[in-house]
Length: 214
Image (cartoon, rainbow, N blue to C red; front, side, top):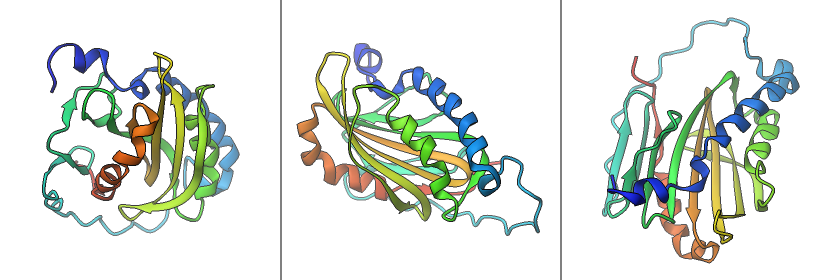
């Protein structure tokens, strides 16, 4: 963890507590809209096979591997990026290159299952999370994706930082049953995004999600 002011004052903007309120408020509407496609109390079926436990892959050269056994989330990021501590219990890991360019992984429990078949039903949720702030300009998405073998949506957008500077986020939402995993990559200012995109792609492609520790 970076000492002193950087760990606090330079925490990425998208860690603000408001984001939790937005997600909670939108979830109630999404549950009602989804109906039978993604029921919060699914009809019991035959027990599914237990998820296969795997050891996270080795980190690419120049990267370090983060693995949270409690959530089953593993991801690699450049060794010269510094991990920060977040006051948000939903944030699994957050790291920064310089206090401005950064990424985080968030894990949220939805209360209903999402699959590739009903992915469109949660687009309202992901749209509303992305556009919760008035200054957001969506450049691309939502685009259906598969990341770490999981279905999801991808967005690219710009936003206005507290200082008035425009930044850019690439934002992945992927779903494992009733768990939503969000990856947010930040470039600040926005014109740094093209330079950072290969690194962001490498971090995203390293994501692995296994069964959480009992």
